[in-house]
Length: 212
Image (cartoon, rainbow, N blue to C red; front, side, top):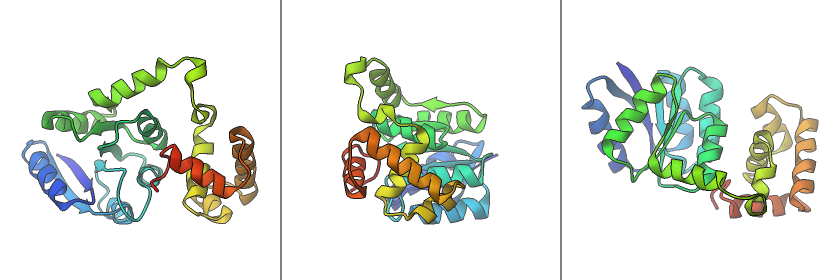
């Protein structure tokens, strides 16, 4: 039996997902969470096989939730279920540790297939997410955005800075030194042509790295 944790801030969505998952026969919902911090706590308490998580929840940036659960429970598969179809969300979700990405427009049977796939160690992309990635790969060099020049770690630090985290908090979260965080910050400013944290935050919001 595949043990599933549901994390979504809308109770009506969780209720529908629970009925769907519990009715599949080979999986069951063992816990639910309505925000990011609760999702992390419930994941630690229940140690589920799969976490199905929306990346737009109150309390904590959804991609940070993915990162933290993946870091604490590397054997737990994470499936992002969201309304966001933009390519940057897909790329960042996989960079944060997700094993699958499915949009809320997908058919119900796709969700069940996705849970089984990521539980088995595979990857899953809904049609909408696959199209978003295809558009990204089809861009010519002149069409690529400033985000394409950033490494996964640089984006992680950028997101943390935009969320108002201190150097010490970022360092503890990623097991690096505060001096290394400062080095990443300097690189970000240089690569993006920005001057300070306020401009980094504005850039992160404009590029949907964090929610406004």
